Image (tube, rainbow, N blue to C red):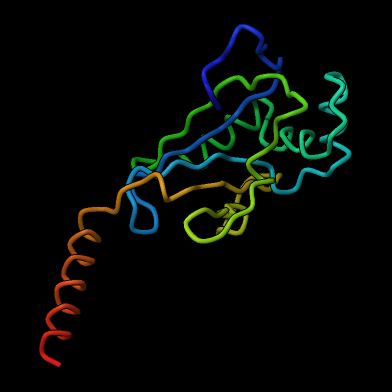
Length: 159
């Protein structure tokens, strides 16, 4: 989410949760925008109705917000020495907004279904959107890719 402008207002009682993993899928400092993977459209409609949101895609923004209790449960479960979790107040929804859950994914952009992890403890399902295009490979993988490229180049010269 971008910096708050004067026209943006805090959505009382709703919070955004993000997590940053020191290393994920060969990349470093990967950010995840957390969303409810099981929020029904009716709940999205009910949460966004006070803001006169009529577009279903804009309503989807609600699935990216949590109560403070839910946000703290997510933080308690996800946070460890290699994962930091940030909770911040959500801004009120607008007609031209949408949840990260509505972003088409593939390749280096994708979702991770946290609720499919063994011993998942939360009573609601969460997932996280990530975009690896914004991150650097870990030093180990930079070396591995450079070595692989060198070996491939060497093979080409010997043929």
